[in-house]
Length: 202
Image 1 (cartoon, rainbow, N blue to C red):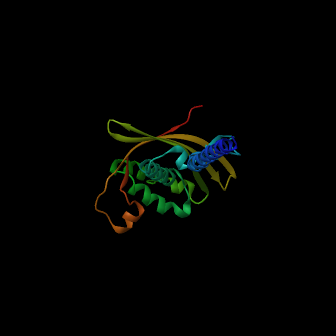
Image 2 (cartoon, rainbow, N blue to C red):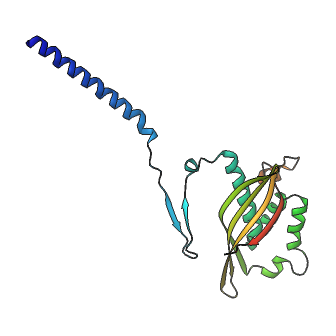
């Protein structure tokens, strides 16, 4: 009887140990799958606008989408922003990232007696904050809709104006022969082929 009890006890102990080992292994393998993704909620002190800052992993954004959004944001900031000290740099970059028709429209802003740099000079600064970039496709043409907060500061009048603009553009990547300097500025041949700006209606 005692021998049978000992056998039964060893069997129970063995089964318990096996279950414990399986449980530990399961926890080890499942732990990496269960992660806590932190969210940072950001509130704009000026506008009161709330947005959630997420990671690339959380959005599961592809590398191609990330590149598209990067070049689009660079283009918008160079074209819509105004910093007198960096004006020539932004002027060159905007043309480099525009096809001929879009570049001509842009050059017109800085031509003639009413050229923007002649009006603003070094008295005005225009900052661009990208709020959102939505990528799209229209009959095989890459498109994007961008919301941007534009802040205009005048050092003479000490005034600050803000507006939200909705920018719609079409774009492509067109690799062509170019100088080493231009290739460094625009390595993938990003080109805006259509450009439109509207005030956001609330």
